[in-house]
Image (cartoon, rainbow, N blue to C red; front, side):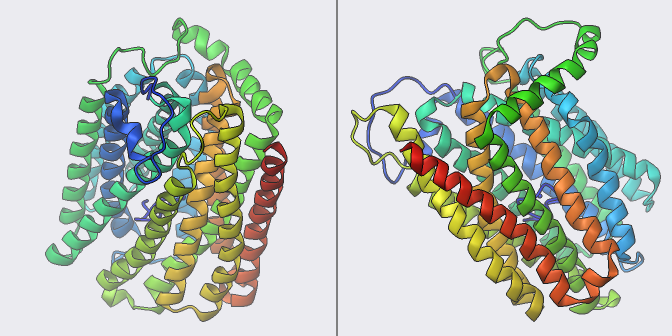
Length: 465
């Protein structure tokens, strides 16, 4: 969590060469870094998400935790809707271009665009204005970042071989989220030392822009230029726009055709929906209940602790997944039986985690203390990370490369819409906020749906192996 609107946290949520089969139970995940392009792709993710963590921390304190600005639930809902819904609408169309344009070029140029918009955001913040211009600039920056994240996910199978794909899905996104969390922690610490001022927030955004620049420079080191795919002839922009709708429909068809991919994606969406509700619950408690407007700096710190708890849960899940997915099998075992067995271990753990998160979330809502809410955040972060690793891996294995970018973009859309639904319904429906029992029930129903889909997937994979 740092402050993620993307969902895994509140951060504001490789072809490795051909080698013989060897057993590496403890260093399996790190072995995916043996190919230079895998290391470069990971560095792009880490630098990019570190910059995003700094940006979102500065925005969170500037918009939500400033003593001069009220924390009206309706304004919170509106802010998230403005930031997330527009990109959710265009995300599937972005996928068409991810499947047509050089993904390496996307990583280079999109990060350059982020640098430009983040410098502009810093200038607006320095002028002490939470204006519509700021909203537009933030929308562009976060939208481009989601474009980058979809390109990174679609590129991973090109730099990591099939045997390492599941461990890579555990390692890469988690290290990216960890980088965002550390960057957010740095931002919060800076605000504590230098005060929660617009000047400090602008400086954090500038530092985030420098990290985005490093991501762009690192992407240029990935060679050859077409290694990240897609391996088709690029066509003119006019042709791409003409075929966007057809490409979107094709992506939906391929997604619906893979029942396991669809079930995995919907399970993540339900968890993000519940996560969105908890985000507002924690934000309002830290801003209005645990502390008053005159102690906004402490409110930032408390919300940061909740965010850190979710990040810790996600990191723990990633560490656990490296053991669950380690290759402990006989070297002669067929891949057709080995891969499903390894993923079954992951799905069994995620089923248990989502079921456990239901009980812990109830306690978090009903008790309402900082410790209880941090516990609920950690449980949701843990379960959400396992769900996301499974969904990413399922998409990469069941959707062909010509449509994979579109499906990942649709997946991003589902996550964003689910998160906005969780945030807006909890923020706008007074009875959910004011009645703890109803608020807890709301989240429990959503998490139960995610748990049910996890059980369904577990049965499917067990039947296969």
